[in-house]
Image 1 (cartoon, rainbow, N blue to C red):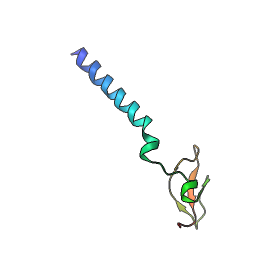
Image 2: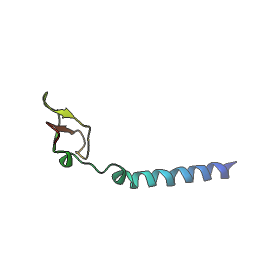
Image 3: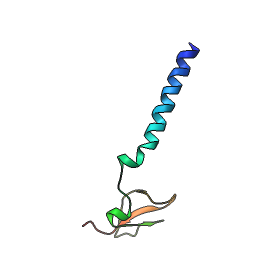
Image 4: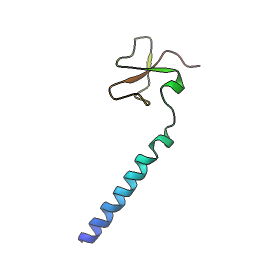
Length: 66
């Protein structure tokens, strides 16, 4: 029973490491690539797009799309 739990835990760790490694590949866009600016708070005229490569506590704010 212990060996099955150890095997399942090992597989989960390998899967999680693979997901973290491929995270940038699966979502290649960053704030500057969509003409956005990283800010603490978006202006009322800007659209909030999430963190998108901004630092911790910053949001990607886009004023318009091309």
